[in-house]
Structure formats: structure tokens, C-alpha cells
Image 1 (tube, rainbow, N blue to C red):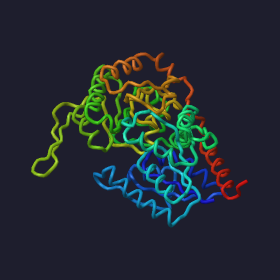
Image 2: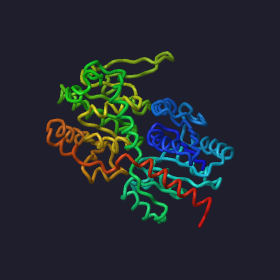
Image 3: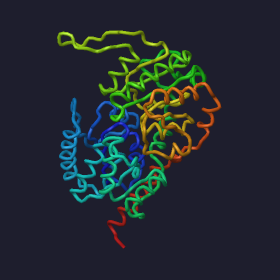
Image 4: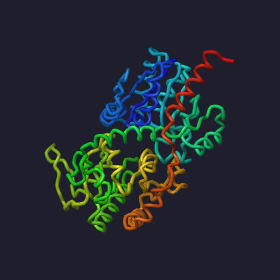
Length: 405
């Protein structure tokens, strides 16, 4: 039974890696991996971590690519790939442009699609943008819907997806996290850009999880570009001044819409072009407890998550991973398609309002009891066994296609 797993970004790679490994270990399947390389460098890092070697690399990423241009290239390239390979089933994950385009191309070829992480909704097509539209459109075309939670299942039922095509599996990101934690604990990685006293080195790894206090920050959402990131950066700056002995570590996303306000407000750097060359002008001192570093590979990032006392993020995956590590999360978004964590109390929505970010972070950084309450809540996103559940559903589905009752 031939299954093509198609993806293009780092988050997709992380969440599909356990599924690919499970399929590859099962003799009943021929697992074929196709990457669009919607993201190039960050994607390759994850593939290396999990020792996954793509069978097809469409290599579609271009500098300054537009959504329209990327969409056209992905559909055309995946159509050619599917015509050549003719898989029995296509698996996609999440809500990226690669997901929607691969699903549409498979639909054109009348190949059934299994959607991993199905049923996430904010109910607002503008937030997150364009991810909400991608996952809604993918749902309309997919044949199998692997919902992480029962709440996701209810969303799909409300959209009249047949109940027999919905499978609550838990989220595969927890499977991936457990695999990564084994690697991190056996061989703590060096984190580029961090001083020695923050490194998760083998000889001081346990000690470093306690001292000094560390806040991990990530951000990349399009809806936060502009005023949103300005407010987030100013909130981080104020927190760093309030808590001078707490270390704030921010792996800064490569997107210029993220880097410019971060480097200007937190790094004290203004970037300008002088005589055709990039000139960086420092206009204010960098606070010594703010560490702006380059984006991290998966294992170093997992090490930092385990090391953190608090995480500030607009990432969906981090909202799912951090509760398994007992880490409180403040979500820098106005809405989330992952309400289970909000209801459970493992994360709090704070948006991009500076005062609210500072208030909620101050409470958690200054009150260990408040952090402990959030840390003790069970992760609502699963037990780390989603991949084998998905594998079994694929087996039954393809067997039925071959030998219908």
C-alpha cells in the first residue's frame, strides 16, 4: 500500500516525522516522502534530526516569494509528482500553503487525502491568515480527518464531515517531542549565540534547569506584523528591566517583518542602506539579559523549552508541546485554534497588548505558585501515541479500498 507524505515547512516535518517513521517500519506500507521545500533551511534541519531522506524534493522556495506565486508552483509541481508516483493515499499535515495545494492536486488526480491535525478552527478567516482558510479548504477535499482532540472532532461534525471519517488520535507533535527529548537528554546540544552559563551542557544540565530563570520567546505570525510586534518587543523590554536577573532568549525569525522591530527595539539596531550596502547603526544599548539569537534547529529549541520557566509565543506547535514539559505559555495572539489548552489552563491568551503581556508575565515570573498551577495541568493534546493510531486507520482504509465489502 503506497502512501505519499507531502509537506514543505519545519512544523509539518516535525509533526509528520513520527508518522513517516511508523509507516516506514511497517512492511504493509511503501512510504514515499515528497517535500515542497516551502521552507528550505529550517525544513532540512528537522529531516536530519529524524534521519528522514525525501524520495522527491520539489525545491520550490524562492526569495521574496508571494502566496500566489508559491501556490501556483506547488500545485503544478505536486500534480507532476502525483502523476508519476500514483500513490494509493496522500497524507498532509496542518494548514500551510503546501497542505492545501497538495490536497487540491490530489483531488484533481482522484487520490484520497488523509489530513493530520484536522479540525482546528478559530472561526475567523483573517486570523491566522492564510492558515485558517487553508485548513477549512483542506477539510472539504480530504477523505480521512485525523483530529487531535474531541473538540476538533466536534468542529468537523458541525461542518457536516461524516463521523466515520473522523479519528481522534492526539497530536503527533507530542510523539515528536518525546523522540526529541530522548536525544536532548542523552546529548544536550550546544545553542549558538548563548553565553556558557545558559548552555544545556551535560555536566550542568540539571542545575541549569533551575538557575537562572529563563523566558523563551518566539514569534512569526503575519497578523502580528506591524503594531503587534512593536508592542510585543516593548513588553519584552519592560519585562527585562523589571526582572534583571531573568534571562530572555529570543530566537528571531528570519522574516524581515519580524526582525526589523525586534532588532530596532530590543537590539538597539537600525538597519539602513548606505551607497547600496547594508549599514547597521546601534542607537541604544542592548539589555544584558536579552539574548537575540538566530532561529534554532529542532533539538536546541526543545532543549530551550525544557530549560524555560515561561514561554511567550504565537506558535501553534509550542502551545501543544510546552504543556507536556510543564511549561506555562502566554500566547501572543487574539485568537487560537487550540482552545483546549486555554480551557485546561496550560496556556493564556494575552494578545499583543503591551500592558496585558507585562501583567501576566510579571505574575508568573514573580509567583512560583502561579507557575506551578499551570505546570501541573495534564496536556490536553495527547499521550505521544498518535502516529500508530494514524497508521492503523490508513491500513484499514486502504484495505477497504482494495477489497470493498
